[in-house]
Amino acid sequence: MDYETISCEIRDRVAHIRFCRPEVHNAFNDTVIYEMTDLFSELDRDAMLRVVVLTGEGKSFCSGADLNWMKRVITQSFEENLKESTALANLFARIYHFRRPVIGRINGAAIGGGVGFVAVCDVAIAAESAKFSFSEVKIGLVPACIGPYVVKKVGEGKAREFFITGERMNGLKAFEAGLVNRCVPDDQLDDAINDLLAMIKSSGPEAIAVAKDLVSSVPNMSEDEYKRFTAEMIARLRISEEGQEGMSAFLQKRKPKWIND
Image (cartoon, rainbow, N blue to C red; front, side, top):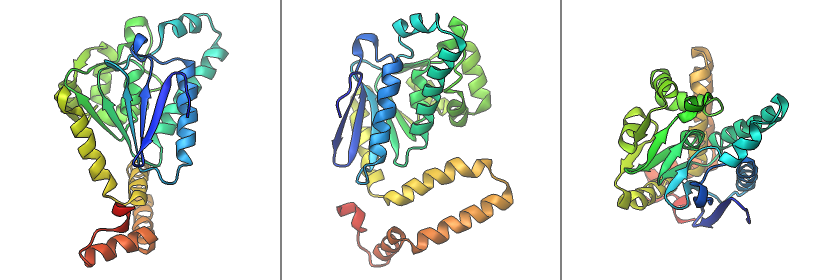
């Protein structure tokens, strides 16, 4: 898959995606949005894929909106701005609801909209040197498209604080707030990612997909709805091919087939 602003390499059923604009600290523009949307559409059709890892080339993860793009945006009409912001909102939703786990390898600065790509990851591991900031208020804007996913991650209280202050925080504070799942020394980032990949690949791929759906769906349901939803979910999984294989492997004290596939 040949793109101008991002790259993707698939190894051992893992798609390694990079923002490839290190000269502008991997800032995103409309081209990045289009190419990332197209890439996730392509990956969604890959039945063999197990995991996605998202990171940035060079010293930054994603520094937010590209300045040259912003120079054009400031002159656009409401309708033109709405079209581009809708495309960005749709991209975040596509990544958030992607069937396979999306892992954030946060190697450096994630600023403004760049933090949105952190928030939509299922698991994010940050290097200690990484910096985070919801800097939109500093230029009279708000983290609108990324807001729903940040609130899901850190809760309303922390989101209010971060969105209002635009504070710049380090990897440890981002971890303490729940924005990232782990914070590790820079030289241990790849080891932490590889350990996480090994754990994920030892689990049933369809069970992982259903687990993602479980977590995102249940909070929006009433008690009657989630009782029925969860009971039907486990009943279907127990009679599924993967569920039957997993339970048989456990009872027979062997590894399930998907570990060796």
